[in-house]
Amino acid sequence: MHLVKFLPKNLAKLLLVIVVVCWCFLGCRGIKWLALAKMSSISAKQLPEMCQELIGLAKRQQKICRRNVEVMDSVRFGAHMAIDECQHQFRNRRWNCSTVDPVKVFGNFLKLGTREVAFVHAISSAGVAHAVTRACSKGDLQHCGCDRTVNGRSAEGFEWSGCSDNIAFGIAFSQKFVDARERLRKSKNIKRVLMNLHNNEAGRKAVEDSMQVVCKCHGVSGSCELKTCWRSMATFRQIGAILKESFDGATEVKLEHKKKRPALVPVNNQFKPPTRSDIVYLVASPDFCEPDPKTGSLGTSGRVCNKTSKAIDGCDLLCCGRGYETRTMTIVERCQCKFYWCCYVSCEKCTRTVDEHVCK
Image (cartoon, rainbow, N blue to C red):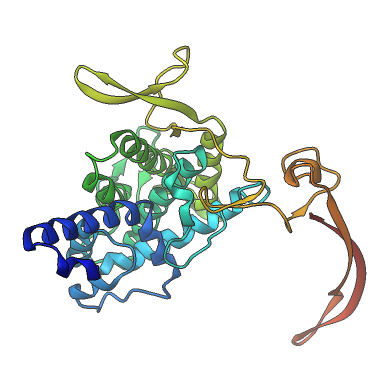
């Protein structure tokens, strides 16, 4: 930057513009708003101007934040749920959804168009939709509440009552906020943008499609003479399992122009076009065996493996053929606990020895 002062004025301005544009294109990729998960809380009492200081928000997301400050703590919680669920679903795989940086949560990993990246987009979009919907039902947000469109008597004969989850509000906000970054760079990499938008929608669709009817019986001794029901979201663990299943059956796609409009179609033309519920990806995944800063791979060295398993968590596959070391560990835990009236529990300490197998 010190060279700028020696250049002609117009050339210096042009150089600065080029530097800034390049920095934004390289630095703004990925789901940077997931860094909100590392915050302890976002108070609804904070001023709208605080949105500019929140980590990882694009300009359009900052604008949404200023108009919806009270919703941002739900967005933070949704990001936290998404990361936790990703780590749970991939805990036994070579890539285990590890976070590497408080700001750039998954490092360079999100630059790739792999099926793992596709899952991260889907689960994060689902996390925001789920968290915002739950906040509506709990009465934490002023501008939304229970879904009042679900009322009256159903065709099955029960009465709609209680607080049905306002899934429409949660999905609409997730779409507006999560998709905002992709809308900003739509002309730069249309293939990747379409992939991200499709997977964002797949995450929200999983939340919507997993809505279930919950009922409560009324009457003498639970005779269920009268039954009231409401619509409720599935647990986020259930949604994570649905998206993991979609990940396992993800479709590799390529860009084609149909009627002068860009669209993603399967690489294998024998496959049917992906639906809104399907996860799609652009490139094959690396093996994640060795550390690689370019792909964001942390490698599997030091990971605990299952010696007896033949699946991906087994030592043969997880350790990528490098072998493993066995170490003996002594575990002290409470056992033979007894409850004494009133009111305490007394336990003994038991010691057991276990073998732990760790990838070389």
